[in-house]
Length: 264
Image 1 (cartoon, rainbow, N blue to C red):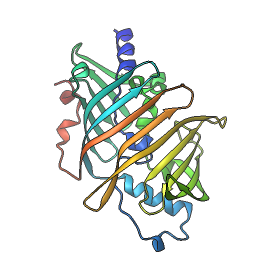
Image 2 (image 1 turned 30 degrees about the horizontal axis):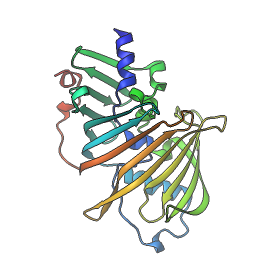
Image 3 (image 1 turned 135 degrees about the vertical axis):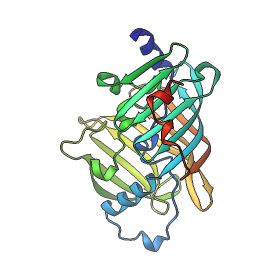
Image 4 (image 1 turned 90 degrees about the horizontal axis):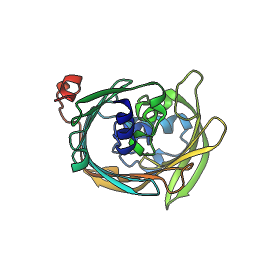
């Protein structure tokens, strides 16, 4: 049964807490006047970025495109989340219909309806790519604010993709269990959304690069519609998230985030 589970893990991807791995890429942000951003410290920039990541609740319908270099898989999914502690993902595309993922704090569970399998992801499995994607389970479980995990340094300002950005370097705080020892982040200087991020191992080797390729504006807020993550160790490997619809601060029953509900 475990062999079957591991094969399924390489075939599917659950988007549990992508914002934690993508520097809040899915949360909406509000543009600030240039005068309000002048002279900000690294800590103040990250505080604003962290503030934009947090919502009391969210409901999202999205598509996931996984390019392994040999084939392309497209998944359709629906996600409900309360804060950074609870998230439920349900797949709707025919090949994966009914497959579910549940995040409760630092625990991650998978349910496969065709085999009635309920599996907890732990140990060495956390370091694996989530179902063949370019995001590991450990990345998805990093739900703390960036300011609680890393020490930041403002390297300067730079124009990235035609947008003025703050460029920051992050190094993991002592004793923190993080997926990457350091990061380099390009933060939109007006809207405070991470537009690009480079993720590094302790050795200094570049492991992954993420980019926000398209933003939407809704009700005076901005949020990314298309996000790409590329694994620098795998030629031609990339994962693309396309957001079709999203609702913020909605009421979601706590009963949705239980193991009993997961197996229904």
